[in-house]
Image (cartoon, rainbow, N blue to C red; front, side, top):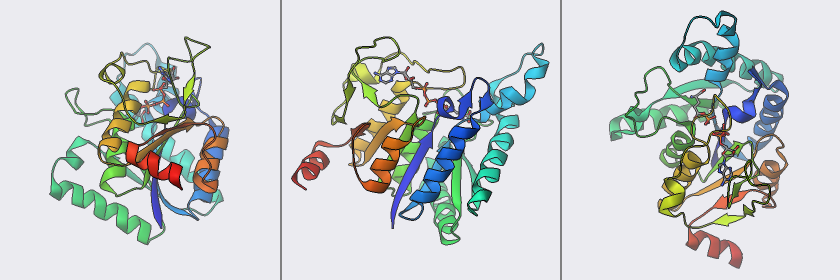
Length: 262
Ligand SMILES: Nc1ncnc2c1ncn2[C@@H]1O[C@H](COP(=O)(O)OP(=O)(O)O)[C@@H](O)[C@H]1O
Ligand SMILES: N[C@@H](CCC(=O)OP(=O)(O)O)C(=O)O
C-alpha cells in the first residue's frame, strides 16, 4: 500500500478562535476514504489556536504559545477522537521535535512507532511538540516537520492543506490577479528567503515554510502537493481519483517528465 502524509494548517482548522468543526469533519471523512487506498499519516496543527479558545476568558494574564499548546493539544485530539469515532478509526498522538530526526537511533524509534501503528490499523496524528522546541531549532513549524515525516517514513507524497488553492506567482491575499502555478520544479533563493506571511495569528510559517518543505522533498526526489483545505475537492481528486485539476504539484524535473509521458 502506498503511504501519504497529509498536513493540515491552523488556518484550515480554526474559525475565528474556535476549532472549525465542519471543516475538521470533512477532513476526517476524506482521510477515512483515503485509508482504503493508502497508509495515511496526519500532521495536524491547531493546538495553539485550540488552547487560545480554552484559556481566552483570562485574557488579562499574559501567556505564551507553549502554554496555549499544552492546553490545546488535548482539546484538538479530543475533537479528532470524537470525529474519527464516527468512522470507527482508532487514532494515536505522536509529538515530535527536531531531535527525533537528529540521529539514526532516534529516527528508527519514530519509524518503528509509525510502522507498528499501521500494523494495528491505527491512524497516527503528528504535531510538533511545541512545549520542548527552542527558537534555534531547524524547523519549528509543521510544514517542514511534515516533510521530514514524509521522507523518514518513506511516504510517496506529502499533501499540504492550507487556506489557498496552491502556490501563486505572488500572494493572492494582496494581489487579486495572482496566477496559480500548477507545477513547480525549481525554487529560487529569493522565494525561499522571503518574509514569512502567515495568514492567521496561530499559523507559523506562511508560504515560505511550505516552499522549504517542498524544496527538502524535491531535493530527495519526492513530491509535495499544495491545495485547498477549506474545500477538499482538489485534495479528493488528487488522492482518490488520481486527477490533478487545481493545486500545485512540487516535483523534480525527472518526475514531471515521467508523468507527461504516462
Ligand atoms: N505566493 C503565494 N502563494 C500562496 N500563498 C501565499 C503566497 N505568498 C504568501 N502567501 C500566504 O500564505 C498563507 C498560507 O500560510 P499559513 O497562513 O501559514 O497557512 P497554514 O496555517 O495553512 O500553514 C496564505 O493564506 C497566503 O496569504
Ligand atoms: N504546532 C502548532 C502549529 C505550528 C504551525 O506550523 O502552524 P501552521 O503554520 O498553521 O501549520 C500548533 O499545533 O498550533
